[in-house]
Length: 168
Image (cartoon, rainbow, N blue to C red; front, side, top):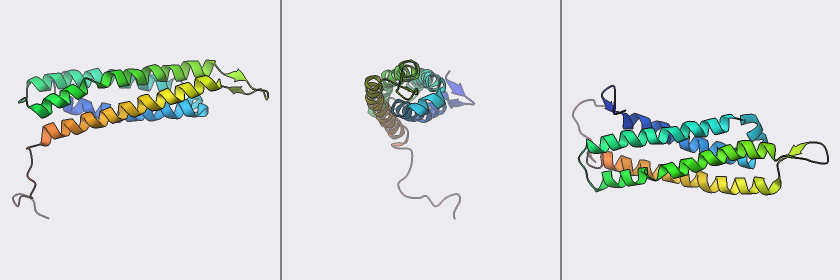
């Protein structure tokens, strides 16, 4: 996919990534730390992570097309390099979302009062890994987005207001 209504598809697709990665990261951490949240979300958690995972290569491929159609400079190259590093983080979100959904739900053991509680070691491990991967993914999305904004806007506006056109 290269153009959508005459605009580079990358410009539109990155918004899915910008919204879905932090949302998935938040849902994953919440479910890993709070078992009731994992029960409530159920299969929605790994499905959200799967959609997020699919959105990254779509945005990246559209970005590679756009990179070939804009003037190359250090900012564009830096943005492309950073963008190539997001998929492993989002892959980690997906794997952990699946583990939290599947393993924590099945590793529950009967407590003395008859309720089911996830095994403590698995819960702690999943929570720690989820926090690390979620933080890495969100920070990476921020860095990529910041570099993309700098590449797109570094010389595309004036620091002083123009007095032509609409005035307040």
